Structures are given as structure tokens and as C-alpha cells.
Amino acid sequence: MPAANTKHPADAPVIVWFRQDLRLADNPALTAAVGAGRPVILVYILDDETPWPMGGASRWWLHGSLSALAADIEARGGRLTLRRGPSARTIAALVAETRAAAVFWNRCYEPAAVARDTGLKKELTDSGVAAESFNAALLFEPWEVRTGGGGPFKVYSPFWRASLARGVDRHVLPAPRAIPSGAAVSSASLEDFNLLPRKPDWAGGMRAAWTPGEAGARRLLDAFLEGALEGYGDRRNRPDIVGTSRLSPHLHFGEIGPRQIWNAVEAHVEAHPGRRKDGDKFLSEIGWREFSTHLLFHNPDLPEANWKATFDAFPWENNPEGLEAWKRGRTGYPIVDAGMRELWVTGWMHNRVRMIVASFLIKDLMVHWREGEAWFWDTLVDADLANNAASWQWVAGSGADAAPYFRIFNPVTQGETYDPGGDYVRRWIPEIAALPDKVIHKPWTATPEVLSAAGVDLGRTYPRPIVDHGEARQRALAAYKSIAGASAGE
Image 1 (cartoon, rainbow, N blue to C red):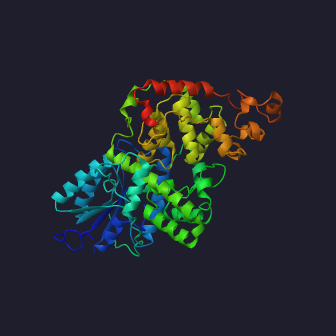
Image 2: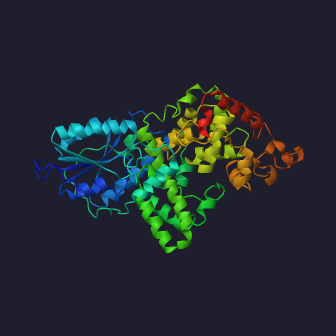
Image 3: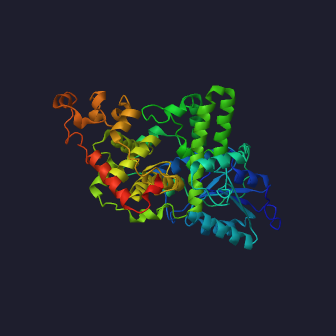
């Protein structure tokens, strides 16, 4: 365990800098600080001077998460200090103010964070302050998993095989029973951060859907293991039922860590051997999260630049009307619109539907994937730079291990396959809820009599399709074939 610099007085504190690790259990930076035998100062810094400042939905979540974290810390005798400003400068100022002996933090892997943390660690060390970082966010560090040639992986399956071959460390650290706090330091109030929407307050749906915080994450995991894990391999693609864990925002903010999830799943499967296949499938989704971080770490421009340079020549269209209809859930394709409305209300969208709406924006409307990435960044409570960038590029075909260019989701057949009874669509698009099942995913094919009986006036109460999918598919195929090397996505 790292120790604070022994040249400092015995009462010199250790600073723990919380970032995307807003939990007490399995938090190696916190454990190390408490074990150093010094007073501990716990700080969170709201830093909007980053290349990708948090969007509105993430800020709403952060408020709830920090509130829960502060309460958990106070129950153990500590205090959470809140500061605002450029992170490195704020930490340096806090060190000077408290004459801290050490600063501990858990690593982030976004390019700007890596550069900032590297510089800060050198600055602190050069000034005689111990600086230690830890892994709380991943099963495997991005530099640990390498190809046979020593380079980073570009394809998921061999990446995950190589990861599993290393073995997963199943040691989970308990939350400290007590946190020794020293002299109080000045702190902003959580309200000072102004994270919650006020005029208007658009977060009602998110409040109804989520409980941010470590306890909320654990309850959700327990409910998933006792419920949706069984049959997960088949049910995870169904947005009309509870078939997924919904742990993604808790994972992003670090209210629960992947080792905790891994251990819980393994323990559950050991007690219920018949669920081994479903458990492995779920854990492979943790693998996709690891792979996305691996890609971002080794390709720092992934959020802005095509991973495949051939896509720089792709003939994207300027389609502001289509983009706006997509954002508002007014495309005329019910499965697309249901997903976009679910996102707007709850800050989350089922993963199968994420793929459908992304394919529609990119391939039906020919809008650049970066437009979708930016909208998701602002509206998702689980907005994660690595996952967001890698997933949008995957759908576009421009990314690593990408979907083949000719894979263009048909929004009608996708709806009929994965929402067969139309329950998902009816929940989010009540204006067409009375349509019969056979036309719920294609209202424009219904007869005037059926539309009238259901109270649907196409073009007025619900839009007609803003694009013909068959024609859009041919246009997209021609565009993909026009760029050199498009077949590399096959």
C-alpha cells in the first residue's frame, strides 16, 4: 500500500480526489488513504473546462450521486468537500491550503484526463507531495491487454479472449468503517454547482426512473440477478420487457465497479448453475465496455475523428430538419420515435433501440455520426466518452470492429422483431397506442378506417415517415460504396 510522504508532519492530511468513482466500497484510492494513518480530506471538483463537459442529463445524475456520497461519508465520520474550477489547479491549491502529505485518486482514461493527471502527478511529486493513482474503473488496464505483436487490439472477440486469459482479479475492497477527518476546509454547497434543471425542470421522468448513488446501484444489481439475468441472452434485445441490468449510469459514475459486478454475477451463477450461459453473456457486455475504453486510450481522437480514415470522404448530408425530427421523436417510424422519447424523458435508451436509432440517423438520414454522438452526450445519464464514441463509430462503419456497411437496420422489421406486441411503442407514443399490432410499427400502411378507429390522423397527430426507408437504404449503400475501402467494414 502506498504511504504518504514521511517528511510531512504526522497530522498532515491525505487528499482523496473523487472523479468517476463515487462510491466507498472497492475504492482503492480511498482504502489507501484511510490506511495511511493520517487525516483524510475527500474532495470532488466540478471542472467544466474540459473538452467534453458533462451534458444536462449527466449533471442531473451527478447531483444525486454526490448527495448520496456525502451522506455515506458523513455516516462514517468524514466530510465531502466540493470545489469548482480547473481540476489540477484546484488540487494544487488544496494541497497548499492544507499542507497535505499526499493526493490519491483513481484513474480516468479520457485523453484530456490522462494528460492532466500525468502533469499533476509530476508537479506534486516534484514538490515533495506523494501522488498515487489506482484502478477502480476497469477489470484490465488498457495497456495490459496486448496482441501477440505487442500492440492494442482492434477487434472485440480476440480482445476479450486475451483479457479473460489474464484472469479476473476478484478481490473486492470493503468500504471503510470509519473515515478519519482532520480540520474542516471550505467547501461549496451542492446547490452552488447548479446541476439541476430549474426553468424548466425537465428531469421529472429521470427522478421517477432512477436512484443515483452507491446504494441505488447495489439494489439494481441485486434485482437484476434475481430477475432479468435468467434468460438474459434472449431477453436483452427486447425493449418491451425488463431484460437488461440498467447499470450503465451507475458504472459510468463509479457508484459500482466492474469487479463488484463480476463477483456478484459469479457468486449468483455458482448458486444457480443453469444461469451460467446468461451470466457469461452479461459479463461479455462488461467486456464491450472494457474494449471501448481500450480503443479510446489507444486512439485519443476517437470522439472527433473517423477511426478509418477512408470515411473522411463519406458524403454526409446537411439535414437539419431530419436531425431535429430525429431528436424529438417525430420521424414517423414508431420504434425510432419511441426510443428518442424514452431518451428525452428518462435519460436512457434500451441498447437494441440505440442501434436502431443510430442506424436511422446515419444511414436513412445520412447525418454525420458526430451529430448523434453529441445529442447522446447531452441527453444520456450514462454518457461515457469511450462507449459513446466507439458505439457511434461502430454503427457508422467507421470504427474498430465496426458493423459492415451494408448492415442497415429496417426500422419496421426491427420493431416487429423486438417489440412484437407493440408494448414499447405504445408506452412512448400514446397517440398511436390504439392501432392494432399488425400496423403499430407501420401506421402509414393502415387503412383510413383503421386509422380513424384508433384516433390517428397521419400528418397531424402523428407524422408520416420523413423518409422512405427502401429509397434511403439504396442511397446509403451507394454512398458507402463510393468511398475507397468501404468493404473493409465487411
